[in-house]
Image (cartoon, rainbow, N blue to C red; front, side, top):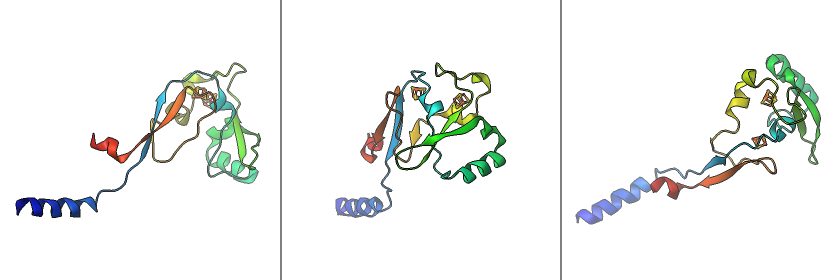
Length: 129
Ligand code: SF4
Ligand code: SF4
């Protein structure tokens, strides 16, 4: 009887367990500079939006529009990356630069080809281990 009650209890509990999938970033930076030379902004699609963003966040004036990808999305680059791919203002780089790439994400990220980091799926079953 106890086992049946336990089974019912676990069955009910299972409906309240959210399906979680995380992506973990592992590896290390090879200092190729691609992420400073080719950036995307998920909420900046037009030149006008880019200017508004720079007006709202003056620190972003270090970025400029480098071009568009095949899908028409804007590609940005930073004025402070050296031809060797290094940051020339490393001690004063933006917090977003310090955090990049985040170690754990809720959405699948696409890293630059040849980047020293890689994206690994962390599935719900991994939480159970
Ligand atoms: S693209 Fe990857 S390896 Fe290259 S500088 Fe950026 S984080 Fe480092
Ligand atoms: S401030 Fe430095 S780390 Fe940040 S995007 Fe520019 S070159 Fe890269």
